[in-house]
Image (cartoon, one colour):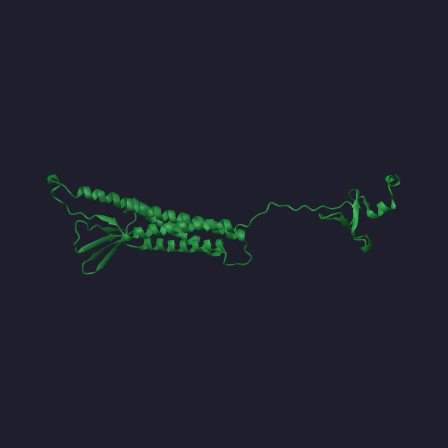
Length: 261
């Protein structure tokens, strides 16, 4: 029961994380305009992985996609690749984990096969979560670097008394969604790997050993000296002497030399 609960909870957490990674990748607010020095503005800019948008004070929003591939920064292309790899691995892991659920029986699939599929899906979820966290972190590092470079270049001339107009960008909501989703996917993958150990059938080291009598149709038992020969009721429950070589009747019919002393 605990294994089934752990596997099911890991599947739900991983599924939620993959959905969050897909949502974060499609969101446009990866970087938003910093309004620290200009809180009142008629235009608000924000950018995503696939397009940049401008929202006016009237509520009208206009977005424009990135119609170039080679003209984009290398870091942005790397973030795109990491997020796409994370989504692909996560979707494959979900498909594999559905067939690996213990509560679902498909044909005559054994528990060992389900254990291997559970481990495979768990590893895929872990890699998917790491890719998402790495992609979001790389983009965040790029934002921090550009932010401080823009801050250093805002004050020029006259000993820093003249401020130039320059747009700075800070963290958007998509970054936090990506971090949380990647963490959930990573946790779900770890739970699936833990559930895999409980699905593996236990192997016993005990090996039964059967003993066979040298005589025909004689079965030895552990509880005493009784034997069953299978020749009829008159031969049952006879005591065995001298290691099975003589029975009680033979001892009585053939006295030993010590009987005359």
